[in-house]
Length: 432
Figure 1 (tube, rainbow, N blue to C red):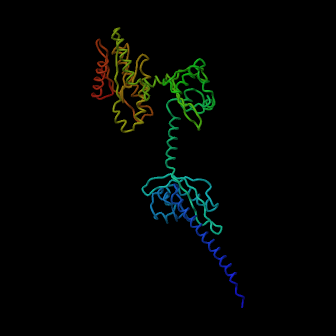
Figure 2 (figure 1 turned 45 degrees about the vertical axis):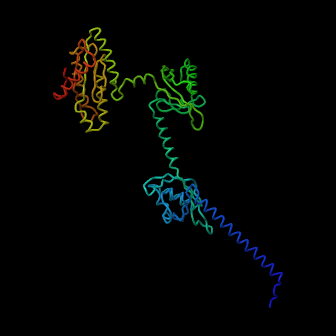
Figure 3 (figure 1 turned 90 degrees about the horizontal axis):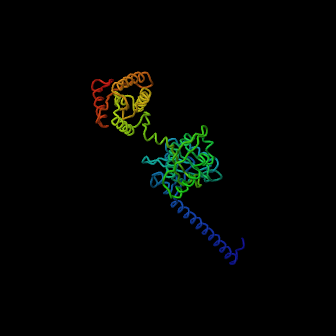
């Protein structure tokens, strides 16, 4: 039989056991504390945190993840991550899952579009790592956050940037006195290719006598001490012809650096836009009536003959309804082109409104106005029939002649009355 341990040895063993037991208790408390801290972080994280198996089945998800995908409580558990993906996202998800299982972690942040149960789409950014057991991937833990607001802002900025690139006025950005960005209209109007403009000293575009004045006015505008557009001259690179332009500038940021954002418009172009109908290339209604007032006053003062034509495309509403507005616009443009080509140089054509046109004929008695009208009728009928239009067109015309004491309203009223009569009589004719 063995020797019984002494009391002293027993006490020593008991003390050792108590120490080991206390150590185990401390380790258990430490594990419990770590678990509580993890659970606290898990539940309070603003980012979505989830745990899933290697097939993508969700085992656990925190409140932020639940809110992000539009689920509540344990309903999400048992669903697969693929169930939350919007259309065309599955391939990307399989690639990410394979990366995590193969390498232990996701190579980079990945954007996924999720679809909530209510049909709402959410843009997200996600990353994941593998949890190992016995040296092999056992679970996958992921973090996911909502980036919908950022995506909307990015798309808005892109649309705004696209709008600047395609704006109907010249726009440029200058840093350190050099162009760093120009839009297409600026390229077209200056006559320089983009590669020549970017990096060019901005003032090299301006005629030398205007440079000091332009610098001073730009500085005043940038300081907020002037709100008036400035006018200056630029040189065409090939012809060296001078052109007057009008512009403004504001302080801006470009790629994080202080910049000057400016725009300019060709003054001649602005004037033409103010008086021309862009679709037909004829004068617009406001300007043609303004010119008619002036010519009418001259005819009255010096007793000169004056005639006025109102013309209307026959059955144009049916044409538009049958072939669509794009074809209708093509037809209007074609009529405008024929009118400009057929009338005399002294005649003044305009688009009165819709499918109605008018032509002012200075120093022209009614007999000559009839000849002009006949040429127009025949040319339009022949040229629109044998063209790329969907169908040939005809016109009806009403003519009026200035008589002493007449005002503009009288001239228009008589022509309009005769136009109405031409249409009532079967169209494709003139009445005077």
